[in-house]
Image 1 (cartoon, chains in turn green, red):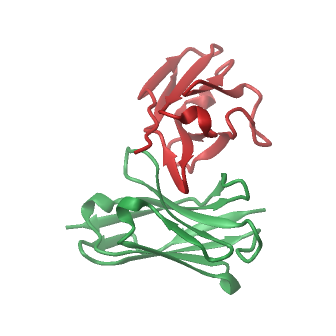
Image 2: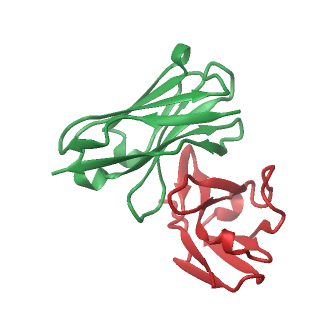
Length: 119
Length: 106
C-alpha cells in the first residue's frame, strides 16, 4: 500500500526558504519507473504542479519557478525534499507530494500540508 | 503555453447526468486525466488515459475525448459526487491542470 506524508513548517516569513519533506512507504524510489512529484494548491484555487524527481535522479521543475525550486531524494530514508527559496505571501498554499507511476499518472497523494507565508 | 479550460461550475440534480468539459489546443493529441477533490481532501484520480477508470472508481464515472475537448461524465449523480473536478494533461514533462469545476448536486 502506497502512502505519502508531507512535513515542514506551517508558517514561514517572506524571503525565507521553505523546506518540505515527503516521507513515503509502499514503493522505492530506487525502482525503475518510480517518481515523486510536488504540487500545491492556494486556498480556493486550482492545483499546480511544481517539481518531480525520478528513480534515476532526473529532476524536472515548473518553468516559472525553476530558479526557486530544488528537489532531492534520500532513497535509504524513503524521503523526498523540496526547497523553495525567497518565499512570498502568494506562495501560501497546501503543498502535496504524490507518487507518479510508470505511465506518469499521479495515482497516490499525501494529505497535504498548509504553508502560510507572512509578510 | 498549454492551458486547460474548464467551466467554473456545473449543477445537476441527484440521479441525473453531469458533464464536465475540458478543452485546449492540441488536447486531442494528448491523454487527459480527471481528479475529484472533495472539500478538505486530497485529489483522487477517477479517469486516466481519456476514459480508463482506476480500480475502485464507480462505473458511473466515465470519460471521453472528442477533438480537443475531454469530457467527464457522471451518470446517476449522487450527493457524494459533489466536489471539485480537475482535468489534467501533460505538456512535455510539465503536468498541467485545468482551473477546476465545482460540481453541485442539488
